[in-house]
Length: 142
Image (tube, rainbow, N blue to C red):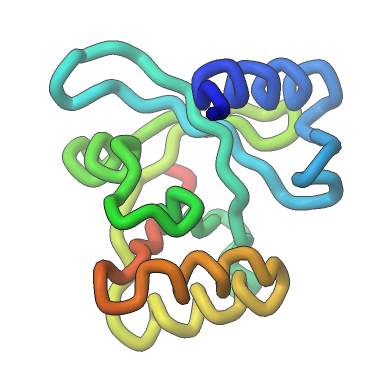
């Protein structure tokens, strides 16, 4: 079993050492580090995520609460939606973002584009079919 905190720490370290680029299974993929506070513990967390840049609005990026197709949403999803804001790192830049959930046809269109670019997201949707709809969050520079 993979220890997710070690996995994330390794990705975060690689991201910061290489101006926002990582290798391995994420080589070439757009990665964002999202800083958030645990809604129950108050602890600060940094979570690496793949994102999809909005082609019409360069201030907006979308992240996907896929949890690799697990039957439950990741904790970070609840942390971000509760507070509605976070800090993000892309490349060598750190900035504040406002967080909103994308729903309906917009959510479906954005998720389908991510799955087209990265087929693993399509596999996650198959795993969660009938259990949950994978949430899509918009992170917009504040």
